[in-house]
Amino acid sequence: MAELSAVRHELRTRNRSSSFGEPQCKDEQQKLAVPFCGGIRGGLRPGKKITIMGVVNADPDRFDISLTCGCGDVALDMCVRFEDREILRNACVSDSWGEEERSIPYLPFIAEQPFRVEIHCEHPRFRVLVDGHQLFDFYHRVTPLAAIDTIQISGSLTITKLN
Image (cartoon, rainbow, N blue to C red; front, side, top):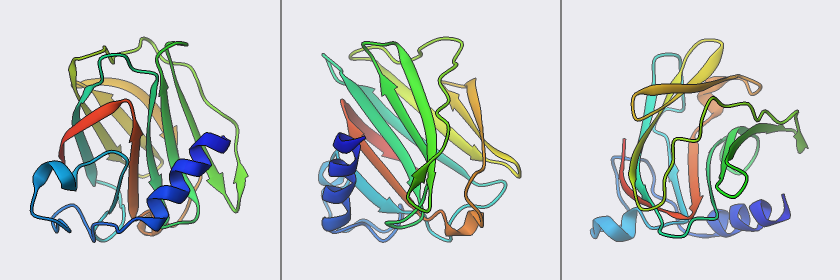
C-alpha cells in the first residue's frame, strides 16, 4: 500500500484535467499520460458509466484504476497484478481500508493487447466489465456517490481513450 500511496501523492501534486471532456493540454498523448488523474464531471450517479480503453505494456507488473473523492476517500481501487493473476478491489473510507476482494473468474488482461474496461455505477454497486464481459461487482462503501469525482490510473499500461 505504501507504493500506491506514493503514486496517489504524485497524482495529487500534478495538475489535473478538470474533467474528461476538458483536457489541460492539446496533445492527446500527453493528456492521457500515465500516471493519469482527471475529474469526473458532476461526480458519479446510478446510470453513469466510465470507459477506459488502453493497451497493456509488454512486460506488465501491475496497474491500478481508482475512483476517489478528490484527494480523500477511495470508492473503488482496482489493482491488476499480473504475477499473481489477480485483481484486488478495495475501498478506503476515513483513512481506513476495508476488506479486500480478490475473487475473479479469469484474468482478462494480456501483455501487449488492447482492452476496454467499463465501470457502470449502479444503485447498490459498481459493475465492472472488460471487453464486454462482466468481471465483478463491487458494492458501494462510499456515499454520497456524487462525491466520487476523480479517476486515477497508474502502472503498466497505455491509455488510448477515456470517456
